[in-house]
Every structure is written in C-alpha cells, then in structure tokens.
Image (cartoon, rainbow, N blue to C red):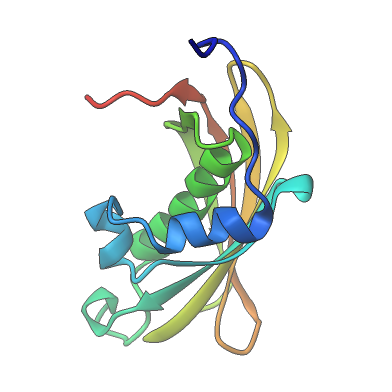
Length: 152
C-alpha cells in the first residue's frame, strides 16, 4: 500500500504543460478568459500564460476593462502556485494589487507570473500582462494562501 504522506513524483515542464493543456477539468473562468498555458518553468517557479481579450471585455473607449486584466493576472498567478505545489494545492488569493500602465485592446494578451516566496502558509507572487507587441500594460503583486485541494 502506498504511503499517503509520500510526495508524488514531479512531472517535467513539458509533461506539466501537456497536463494543463489537455485537462478536461478547466474552470469556466479560464475558458471565458481564453486562457492557454504557454510555458512552464518549474525550477524558476514561473509560468507564461496566453489569454484572448474578447471584444465583450472592452469598455466604451475600446480598451479592455481593468477587471478582466486583473482576472488574467490572478489566473496566471494561481496557476503558477498550483504547478509549483506539484498540483497538490490550490491558491486562494488573499490580496492583489494591480497597476495599470497602458491600455490593452481586443486580441491576444500574455501574462508572465513568478513566485517570489513559497512558504508553508503564504505565497508571494508577481505578474505582468503584455500586449501582442510585448509592451507591459499592467503589473500585479499578490499574496495567496496555499491550501490542499478541496472542493467547496
């Protein structure tokens, strides 16, 4: 019988990327944001995530409403924490600060998220959202509380 306290083997970056891309358990919010995990760098505790800023996200000026950009940043940060835990924990966000630097328009967006410190009860992360030309349009810092996976 397997030891329940034994750590499960870590997947390679390519295997982890495939696991997330091929999952049939994607949250609806990920689909709404057009989320696609693009890169996994477990040794650096960093991921790159692509999103599609849909026209329904635009405000009257044609720019993407900030809440959707915040959701993209939060989704990338949370995904990174889940991967860093070897898919054993979820990552409820305790707080997040977003700085909006430039407008984002309808179309592709990319978020790079990095963990700064992964502690036993708290995780500190940062992320930046870029437009299709690679220009940083928003940054975020976040604090999350890693918890074992559990459905509410």
